[in-house]
Image (cartoon, rainbow, N blue to C red; front, side):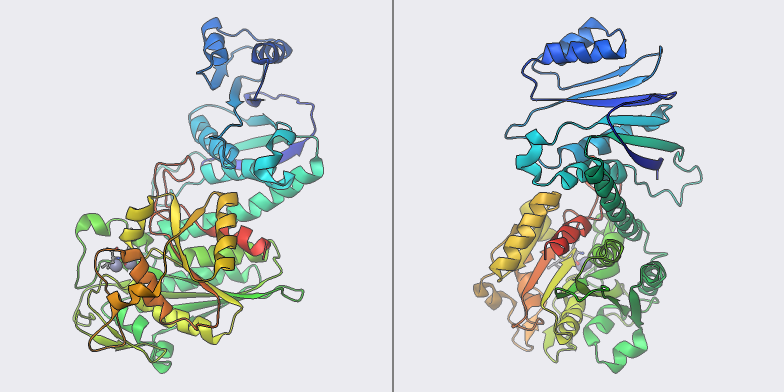
Length: 498
Ligand code: BES
Ligand code: ZN
Ligand code: ZN
């Protein structure tokens, strides 16, 4: 964490303390100059005429101002245009950017004058969520992973005071956001942790330790138990590593009668070297994050418990290290998976789908109302959609529509790709029930079709390929520095509306 954030709610009147900042939005102002002048007069400051002209000019959209005399010392003014380019992510992204900008300056508090909800109703739907996106922005932008740095990032405290008339909505939004941010932080901590430390068993241990605080039961099926259950797919992928594979199973039960029972499954490859079908170094660099799907499942259970969501959730994370050694699984091998189906291994780098085969069959055995899985499964999906959206694969329109809606609301967007049975012919094997490799074309889809073989057809199921958005990218202010935790906010919204 860069700052120790202390987020507060307040009514309209602002009392500035020393080294304080003020954030003010001008929303679709017809008479911008007049409103701007009134605002400045009320602060009793002198502003550089050129800065003022630039801001009032059509092109300028922000004015950041520092004043030595009197408080507030730092003033951040931002125009908001509610046009085609305006998105529900506007405030989240703005505040995430603001909090990283102010790391270098001396500041104790930031006062935010929240604009009126009226003009934003169309985009946000409800007032609590409108406010929540702002708090989330501060939280998500304030994350840092500095445990291995000798000189730690700054951790001074910062008061963030939101000024808004509807105190109830504001308080609720702060509470929601803090619970969600906490869970996203835990997910990010797991994804950013290097594989030298975060082995499969260590992933299980950290999960168990953290989730037990929230009443979630975690069971770790270790190698012995995997052998006993004939979970040969996980065992094969994890065979070469000194660090034994395992399957982490979590259970969250709400206090009241649950509306639904959902199984969440997440790929937990703690390191993907490619195995004997070895990756080049450049490809390996990011592969400590190949357990991001698993981390999303873990973070989602944590958030569900913290928010007391009325859904029963089973979390299933098959965890393995895809390495090279005398016990490596090999191209040409045939594996008898937990479900009894046989898999021909054509490429050991397509390992995610193999471990998920056992996990999805286990999930199906629990007879949930639906199954959703998360996996950094294919580079092909990131090639197709870029880094801001996850690929969505399902035959169930209702599940699809709900996930797409939650994606639009949280801005953790998902995009549905074709899932026709025609693709099945591409992963046919001559000597086994299914091959783990299709041709280059449609690689994200054939990976999904492979998974489909291991899911009970009667259970609604969706697969989300998060290879693009799970890993840090420059496209938003809260995903630039560290692997992102993409999917937790999406799932919280999905579960809250299920
Ligand atoms: N973990 C990778 C996919 C990946 C790539 C995730 C880049 C995040 C960023 C996966 O196990 C993999 O190696 N997939 C192969 C599949 C291929 C061998 C069919 C790929 O995408 O190249
Ligand atoms: Zn791989
Ligand atoms: Zn992988």
